[in-house]
Image (cartoon, rainbow, N blue to C red):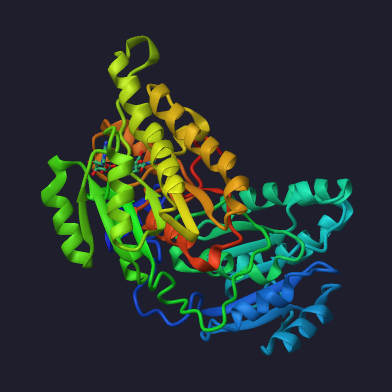
Length: 472
Ligand SMILES: NC(=O)c1ccc[n+]([C@@H]2O[C@H](COP(=O)([O-])OP(=O)(O)OC[C@H]3O[C@@H](n4cnc5c(N)ncnc54)[C@H](O)[C@@H]3O)[C@@H](O)[C@H]2O)c1
């Protein structure tokens, strides 16, 4: 659905009127375009707290962005460490001295905070970000890398937990459609940072802000890995793929090299076939709540050599307040949005249909985080999805399988087009981007989770919500 407000606000006449009335002008987000040579382009500045252990991996990842020009901030205590890490990674890092007057702008600000051991050392964040935040370009990127708090000694745990507050506040301050995100990396897992760093620094994270992921040690080795086609040779099944977010997921996953099986209910067969033929995929008609659906999906997947990734996207709303809700609304929403996913996962694992190094990616919702008036059934189901991700992650990690979820906010689809106008406008504007997201924004985040390079990324919930105020 088109956002008329955004279109008018960005027109030559509209932008003048909106500015004079002090109305928000939602920036047109920069999104990924095929053939883009570099996940980030332009000037990028990196810094570190003394003792930072991620900086060499950060610079090694940036080396694979040929259109990025790297700098570090002169005068920081760890300036020499950053230069040394640049030497180890084989990249040129220029020295930048900030002044209020200079017109220098940066596309990315990256800070390695892994060296921060107590709250006094949090000052390193101020020293880096204070002179630089006003120098962030439109659609800029901030990434901070810290240590997983729960795995740190007490003083460090307290300080590292503080990074979440920093990132969420920066996300709200930086405006102009820039995003700020946090990567917590376990000690010894620094070599696994590349997929998360590339994602958060790229236009693929256009509508993802104020989020954090945890990266654990894993055995992914990027030698010879094709970052432009990360899913080459993989077979992926997407449920609810006939339209909306599911169709966008299928397209992005196919773009990234996978063979895609798209599934939807029989009444959606025509739309489903169109999606399948657009992406050279396979259509599978099934109702995921049917008693025989798990076995049918497992058998169909086996015909294609098993699944590398399953994406549980199919979902419905049947909104009513608890007092006014018929029981069939409750049962239907719980069964489609969570019950069927549990049964399908169990069958795929029992049959060994999910290949070694497999991925389960689920679609939750910010309703499942914040709750929502009239959505007790939906919010329960989507919070349960989070429970499934967090509950299954440790057990699956032992089998080399990851499980993560996206939690979309307001995304422009037929589902949200059906919301009454006033509530729809509120949903669209109440976030740091002052606009709704596109299905492709959810799809890009899912493809990041699905990538073989994200082997160390499991048990995470990433909101794709433009940093919605709902449930923030
Ligand atoms: N649109 C948003 O703003 C938003 C926000 C948060 C979460 N989500 C979630 O994203 C997912 C996709 O949402 P959407 O907006 O694209 O919705 P949509 O209604 O456009 O698409 C959902 C698809 O799922 C299919 N489906 C429904 N029941 C099924 C069943 N029993 N078996 C197989 N397929 C079934 C539908 O036929 C449809 O094609 C859902 O899980 C939804 O809850 C959407």
